[in-house]
Image 1: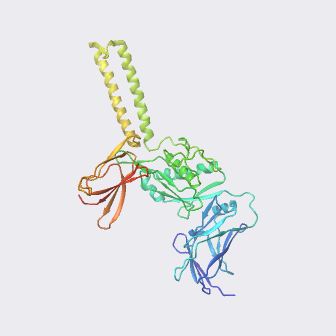
Image 2: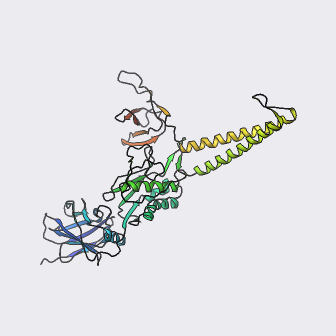
Length: 453
């Protein structure tokens, strides 16, 4: 028998542990088998072939059975077995519950999960059945789905960190309440099954996720804000973000878009709408946020109040005109003793109408939803010419068309792109219009050299 000297130390790297073992060196290293012992909660990876020294990146090890999956965390790493070339993993409580519910799971070892320290040679990616040993659980646990996100950006993109954090949690919880086979756990700083990217605002979407990817690198992008008609940031409500997270999770488990506008999985004008809509066996939450933007409800309530007061003022004026006015022509006439009161009533209506218009304009600016037939004129900078020396013409595009301006920094040649509402007017830019196969304008991008007037 070979004498084995083992030293285990944890590196200060997320998802990595260092195992040093002295063996006869061979390049033919592979995982021979993987066994999970339910009673002792022990997962053992058995190797053939030997590294002298190698690293283990637990983030590269995952288990999936087609309907659920999880990735390992470095905290679950235990130690190599002393009598063979094996790695022992002890799943945490959430992963243990998930394993108990899995049917014919497969363990996957990705690129970089194991690497030789001497020359960085990686163990080739592999996938093999995970043998389950021990009595079947009498009460199988749910599929525990872990998630995480770049939550430091909540302080950048959210008005209230605590409320928005809870909204993200609630976006998953509404699924768990209706589907007992699902359970969710936030693994702050660990290796999640679902990664949520809190993204900068883009014209194209508020949320975006991969389709049917729960067992293979599930990700979603969500945006916590957008811009109003004055290019000022307006923030989404927690209720709306709960809806967005729940909607995007539906995509991750394989649901496409529903044709009904009141359905969780509805998307306006989307080509991927499915009718009839398959639920894939899930009970789908029925949630519809009443307000999309913070401050929207207050504006609507104020608008309703002003409108109600305005209607009362109109009624008061109408009653006064019936009693004291002459309606025999299109113009209501009052005698000298009633003209001042009639004017005061009419001025009140005018003032309330102006206030109503102001609030309505502010609400429309916040929502910034152009009518479908609205267009904007997209023009290149005047210095841009065609090949024959003529000014490049303007182009009318739908108001919903995304417009990007990409600036090139001279010192670094680094390109930074930002969404805008109107084309740039003070720098030299090249315009590029992207069209769909049928000729519709899909996007307009200006590439500009920063600092060139």
